[in-house]
Amino acid sequence: MNTAGLWPVLIILTGNSILAFIIFIAAFFQKKGQKSTAFMLSWFLFIVPLFGLIYILLGQFFKYLNRKKNVDMSDISFNQNREKLILPPDSETEMNYVPIQDAMAVSDTASLRRLLLDTLRNNAKKTVSSIAVAMNSSDTETSHYAASIILDALSECRTTAQNMIDQMQKHPEDVEMNLLTLDYIHEILNMKIMNDIEQKSYIYIMDNVAENLFTHNLWYMTAAHYLWMTDFFISVKDYNMADKWVTRAGKYRPGMLETYKAYLHLYFEQQNRAAFLTCLNELRETSIIADEEIMNLFRLYGGKNG
Image 1: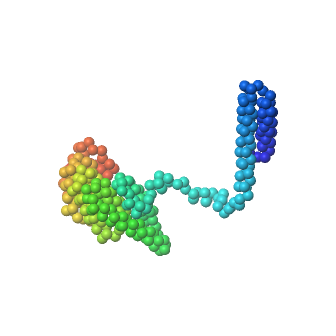
Image 2: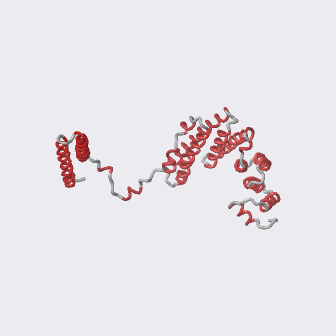
Image 3: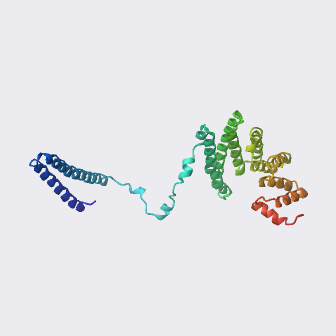
């Protein structure tokens, strides 16, 4: 409210005050039954405008104080290029992000699983996916920085994975921790940022984690878990281990799309054409909804006999 707009308000408040004073004086000349009512009316007419006046005066006072403060114009920019750099906060991600060390201290395993997976997907994995492209840069210094960032992310992943494995070994029947550890190592392996030797080593580490889940909580193993293990062992050409997980998938998760895919991947890698086509034709006869990979195989091997 500006100063010019204050005058009508002040006139009204002054008029109210004068009226309240008149009623207050007149109350002394009223009859005994009406005197208390007149006094209350006069106080009401006086106090309410008084509070209003105090409110307005305080507002003007604080406005005067704020106007005296110096403004740092260096923080203000009308440049549109700078404005584009200011991104809205991702509140959901930020609220779920915690340091790995803090997440490991959470006693609630369900919360621990959610926190760790959010941290991995929104921190290390996101960083690696974005930075890995820069490793192929022709600028040596840029590729060096990119490699350093990836090494830091990988170091954090190793430490976290080892901590989770230690926790799982202390409580081998804790299904939440077992699933969390399995998912975490799966995420690390899918990043494909380790050298061949370490990648292979972690595949066998993941096998131990999966074996623990299979031993203590068999029915928590999904067809997707069996497919993970099969594909990872195929990638290192350990077909005996791949066959172990494929056989388990066929026994404990029959009739699932991922189970069929595990068989198909292994047969294809072993160049077992007859078994591959038999499995594919068997899948064709089921009511399982095929994904893009399987649809491509159906188109490529259109006939019953390929």
